[in-house]
Length: 349
Image 1 (cartoon, helix red, strand yellow):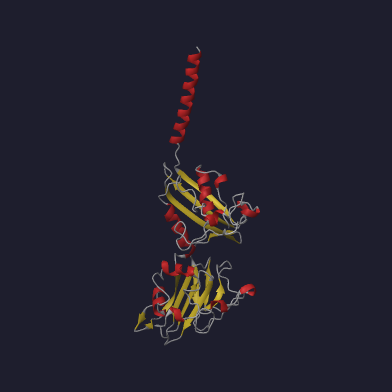
Image 2 (image 1 turned 90 degrees about the horizontal axis):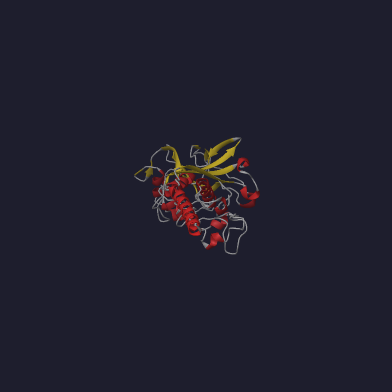
């Protein structure tokens, strides 16, 4: 009897374990899952009260392969939401205006721009126009200082001049920093003297992002101004630029739209059992920035950083700071049941 009872109990356990194992194996991940990160979470702001948020939407097949991915950076303005990567722009230029340098530093004040720009975000923006008399105006938002650098070339200008020969410190006839498009630039000059001897492509080693991809790909400091303008869309005949109505776009990876599309393309085809974060948090300089509550970039160990960015190689195909994007991605995995909320590293927004 005892042997029979033991057999029954053992059989029941084996059946139960087999059933549990079968349930796990047969669980399908197919579906669409949404995750968020948002501005102010580290200080107690709730998602529904946030003015900025990143939304990740993942579509998975039975095996957890990502078949579609969308990442949207939402911002609220006057009660309405729009996406930061919406590249819709309205830009005009007045060729009679001479650009005037901005006042940098703590007492920042914008200078005078030739361009009137209405767009959601100026990241990686460029614009160029050529007047009937050959006067040419160029605007490039430099990614490290995040200033609009503008230059006007008079009729008869020698376009064989090299990029390396054009100043960026506000000197007349050089690139003039006229408007700060964001206060979060990696380089924050207190005075323009800090850019003395620099050129548009040498302000920082990270300026390589302008020539690694996009319309300026392949250019260098030894390229000519004609090379630069041709890349932006100007046509030259005999060294003279043709008249051109104002055209504009995004250089490098394409601004926010290009960066987020790069993340999406990186994710499609990946298995969520293998990719559970956009960032390798075992990297020492980033791991040291994660505190006991899993918030990144608030309490830092010596040598740690408060931004997860590696523009030399990129993270998940993108050159933007990635901790907040990774949080949104991870929370989509929480919704899918792949990881738990306790596994989520809450990035610096």
